[in-house]
Length: 284
Image 1: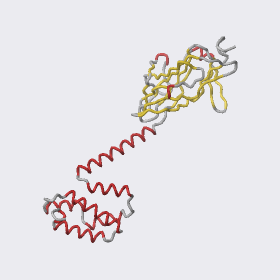
Image 2: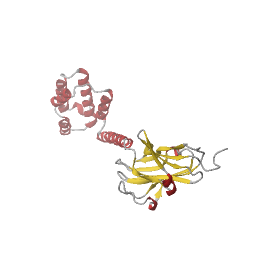
Image 3: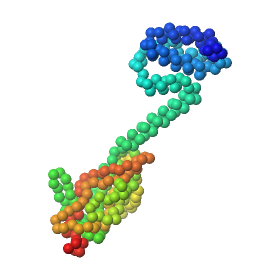
Image 4: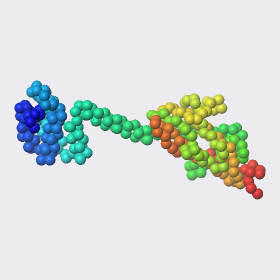
């Protein structure tokens, strides 16, 4: 190694002390650590480094006995990935090490971000709810069976019907409702379905007058706030006497942070339409 900083007497003395101190370590561990330290000294000390610069670098490394003691405390064999990372960092100059650390921090931050977003709670439905049109509300019947509730109104074929509920964002992330998941609508017989959220926040259990609320889509729900959600459609299809069809959950496409995902939101009760349909809507 003629012509390198490792030829300086102060460095040669340090490396001899290092050999003696590392002699008590397992063979593979001692060899790897000595190789990393020598590579670090070669990269850090240029051929023109004087004794003072070399001594300063060696002081920052620590004494050979201290390095051996630290290695014994972490005597569990390092994984191949850890050994590779250590060897890589030992061969980088300060700029390379800074870039490597910044890259690792960016990866950790992004991983935390996406894990947090994916763990954000799904919106929940509250207690304020009702059929949107008064003539549906007047004729609707609430029934219960096996712990499940069903709110049933007569189908008005070819006419607009709908309901409203309050929806809460229990997470720490703003959630933006984009529409039905997949662009579809799950209520049997419904056509031209429309999903909207109120733009005004309100206290849980007191939405005020829903008919004075302005609705829009996409609809934004800030963290831990409530909004009104309105679902409207034009009823179609044919329901015979005594038959009923409806939904008890909504599949929503929701944007959380930078990601968009489908969320299944239970409605708490079923919203159903019952037959018979309007005269002439069913084939004879």
